[in-house]
Image 1 (cartoon, one colour):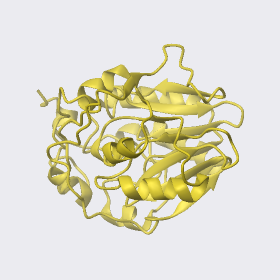
Image 2 (cartoon, rainbow, N blue to C red; image 1 turned 90 degrees about the horizontal axis):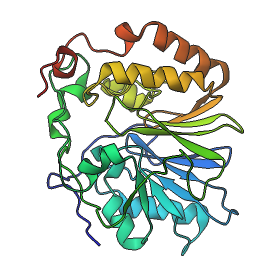
Image 3 (cartoon, rainbow, N blue to C red; image 1 turned 180 degrees about the vertical axis):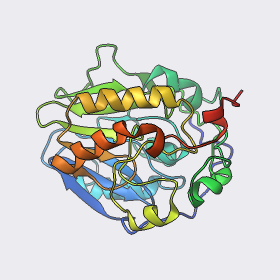
Image 4 (tube, rainbow, N blue to C red; image 1 turned 90 degrees about the vertical axis):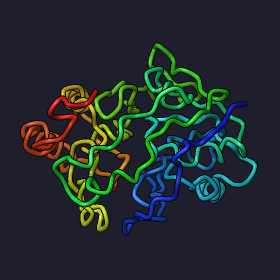
Length: 282
């Protein structure tokens, strides 16, 4: 099986007050790995569970340890689902796959970035924003290669092993970005389609100040598609959300936050300037 982390894979010294914590929402767990959430779908007593995303660089062993704390040893996931292939969502994937030989599902539009064929655009350090945007040049952007493990998501939007869930294509932050939704309790796993912390602000990430915000702006390449994706997610009327960054939210604060974000999209989400905003990206 072909497995290779990116050529620029390296530990990134970033943290938050939530780092190392595992929280439970219904029968879904999420572990905050430095600044990003790794999600475990399934109660400990369930026959199967599914891992969503693979955390920051060098995080594979820790994610395995967290999974074993929840489900016990010798209980690999039925599969891994990637919301997208950015460095902070695939950083531990090869270590995890060496431990657990399981299929990885992703949208075909993400395949170039996770099969070694194409690098993502470099993060935009010029983008209007805070400290995390300014230092984004240190973030890995080269492709990983998990060619031997990755499988396209099913065309009918169903998910093998998770009959109550469906995947939703939510491009903008990346071409093949997806979110997951369970209609039964209206639980949304948003990935980075929208987040609940202002991701370019070092202070807000550090203290995990809770607010519905657009996708991380230094890596979002298509703001028109990103807005349409949030419109589509809001139309699902989620009652709960577990984002890629920030704490989970539910009920009125989530609904009001989404409404306010969409009503003020250009002011809240879209940077005043930047190569992806100004159309300078090749």
